[in-house]
Amino acid sequence: MKKIVLAMAAASVVGFSASAQAASTVCVFDLLGKAGDSYKMMEEWALAAKGWGTEINLVPRQDEAVADNDFKAGKCDAVAMTAMRARQYNKFAGSIDSLGGVPNNQIAQRAITYVLDARNAAKMTTNLGGKKYEVAGISPLGSAFIFVRDKNISSVEKAAGKKFAVLGYDDAQKIMVQRVGAQAVLSDISNFAAKFNNGQVDMVGAPAYAYKPLELNKGLGANGVMWNFPVLHVTADLVLRADKFPAGFGQKSRDWFVKQLPKNFAMINRLEAQIPGKYKMNLSAEDKLKYQKMLRDGRMDLTKRGIYDAGMMSVLKKARCSVDKANFECSMPGE
Image (cartoon, rainbow, N blue to C red; front, side, top):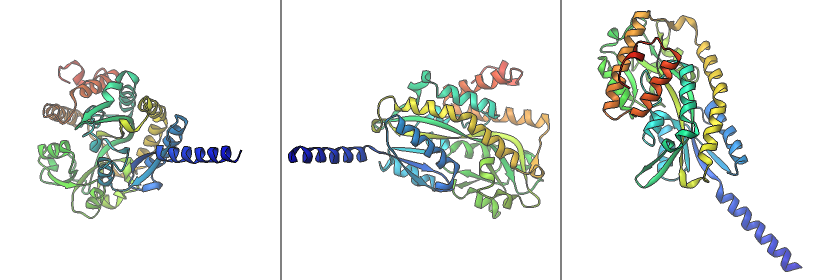
């Protein structure tokens, strides 16, 4: 009897050890660490994953480069970070954030829902350097708007020669800023706002999501404005090492992210409404159309250069034209 009890005890210890080892480590980028909304959303996801039979150990990272490097080094089995940095693992999913590709939240929700659908499962996996990666979720962070320290910078033409903070790892931003004659100042997601707030740069692009935590009101001061025109839609991707998760896990995860979209967009709408009206500079209909055409030209050029995925550009155009059939581009070839 004693031997049986000992054997059962040993088996339970081995089982506990195997269970502990089975926990998958997920690095989560959030500027506010555990206090941030992105991290809190991933806590909800981890709880859902437990229901799918997978234990998750979340590791907060307030520096996105560190999160990515930890993932590359194998310290994390998955990483949640902005799509601009995640594009290196999956260009299709990472191209939702293309310039002018998603001009409003309605189109963003439609595009993300389509991309995460099971019919696109094959496009969510990539093989790079002998390693298989899978995008297991996309969450919206909202439209990026241009913030300027001086309201006299009221048009693209007046941005010529001005210093614009761009994310150094996103070639699309650098190329587009240079196209309009502004000076691209290479920055990181952890310091671009500080450069704007202390006057090192004249302009930045950011979603309403970043306005309060990054204190962009300090950079706006008494004379700055936000161009009330979405330049692109910022998203975050959850990228897995596919061999570290059970078969079918990725699609269960993607389905979960789709179910969160109404809540995500309700929060985005709330955050956009919270930016004081005194900072919002509305553009004329003529300027909006001009900038849409400019962004389209830039987007098509960036796709030809291989920065954006052509398949995703087609998906986004269909989404735009399903919402606004009268849009100038809907009768035009390309994308």
